[in-house]
Length: 254
Image 1 (cartoon, one colour):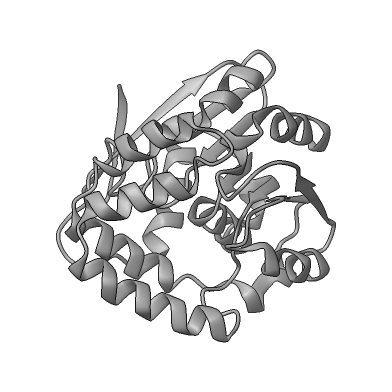
Image 2 (image 1 turned 120 degrees about the vertical axis):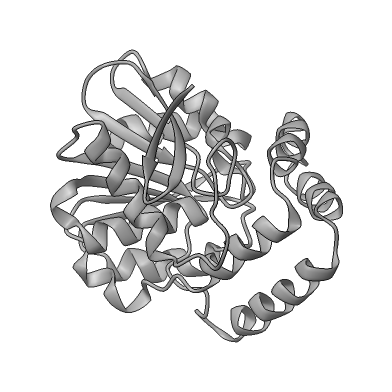
């Protein structure tokens, strides 16, 4: 188990392969194992790095509120720890937003972006302005076991093996930890800064991903040198539902 420390937080990571670096950042409540199919497909050609965002998986989380900037600072700290001047960043959902914000804040460190089911704003329209506060309220009174089971059922319709992974990943989070992570993720906003992204960007969205699909065309129109591709037969768990198509898209992009 490889671990380094950034500002009092122990962050877990894994490195496979040699070559140009690609850093994969998982979605909220999940962990680095989300990317197992991508690691196996790419490690013979690239240096593939996965990590657990603070509070997830094997990474720790200090007491108190989380500043959403901490997520980006942790990613840059990981690059510094591994002596990487630049890397391609790939993320799904919250992990995509962390990658996006890193490219906005540190454009000189990012060679390319692969954003899968990624939001650029958590107040994009009226739906999100209602959904986020409502979900925040219910997540405080609903057990993590119920949240895990609901999420696992919803995202395993195409790939049944997702169910076990989602339950196991979520089991590593307490309700308190999840509420603090969700509050921080809900404050992430990049919509007005998309024009600051300087690297080539690939936007991937699952055919049946109804969480963030309405933001993808906006991002494609407002990020310079961006390309949008729909991944067939996939939900919000896009890279696990259809790993072959996702892997091929990443390889073609790189």
